[in-house]
Image (tube, rainbow, N blue to C red; front, side):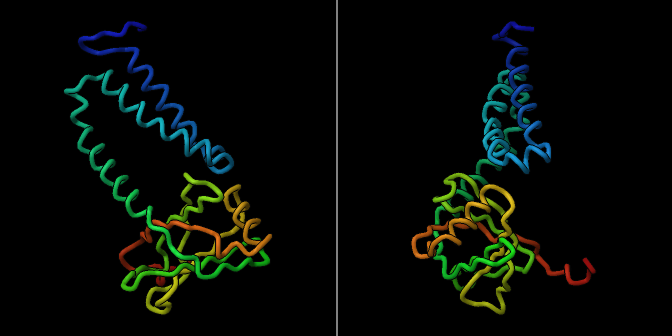
Length: 194
């Protein structure tokens, strides 16, 4: 059980992969994910060690079965990284009395999205690594120059954003990066009552 076999199946590598997988799984418990989002976020970077030790455990022959999906995952991460490097201009920020913030970004012409689309927002002055998903509240057909997001102050990141915008006018100095918007291909949400 503690022997690292160089030929065949290595049990130690499998046990280490299991430990990393269990740590990632424990971090997905809703209470941990919602209250300690940074722990959830950083724990999921253990997927690299999980895959390395998984390959050592099963060997390269069986690992080739999962490498195509891992390749697609890496291509997706690289494309998202390239897209997220673009900073957008924050046109307007409004602090609402219900501890919410409305952010309006300038948008490129031709960018279309649906009202239920989701975009990821990163504000490096709050956290360089955290990207938070928010639903787009504007319509690309009605508002041609801007894209709006409403953010309710709930977690640590959103509370820091609310404090940052409510204490002083940081709109001119606030750098923001966005990724997306991503969303459904249709607006069939109108046929549902809730």
